[in-house]
Length: 229
Image (cartoon, rainbow, N blue to C red; front, side):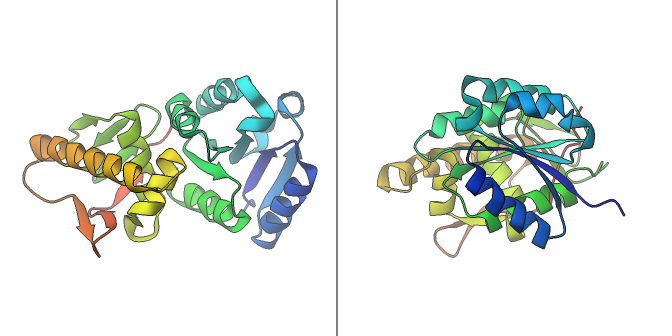
């Protein structure tokens, strides 16, 4: 079986070496590019299964490259954005990134996300729940598509990537806004409440987005990612 191939765009060579070392340990083939020009020159989209883009390295081009890579159905895109820029992370998901994580990040967390994307995204399913982050749609077993806001899209994407599709509220707050505090906890509660009403209106009274262990949210039925178009 061909090893998983990951391209990493990062201007910090020391950080890139650390990530490549983690990739190698996990049995993943990694390629480092200092910028967008190197990525384009090497035709990385033709060899990569997952492309990891650093928003600080690419600057204003980061969303453009995410959108361009999203056009290739065989590629998954991870964006890394500053923890202090929550709107940039939401914009990355809207542009076409499959998932966006905060910087600084734990390389082991990045590896886990890459492996989960590779294992779950390529499937084409005829039944079950499907999340499409690019088109901001959640589709149920009866093919009833539910339109999602950018915040709802990030929320469900994070849950789909998490073990057992469950995350603590503080982890969700960090993923969406880059900060876990009282204000963002209230914002998360409002987002969850509105999403639940939307799900109930379209799907019925069955509890799909549950609260368990007081501060943990879980999407109960199994969610899969839609194949890219």
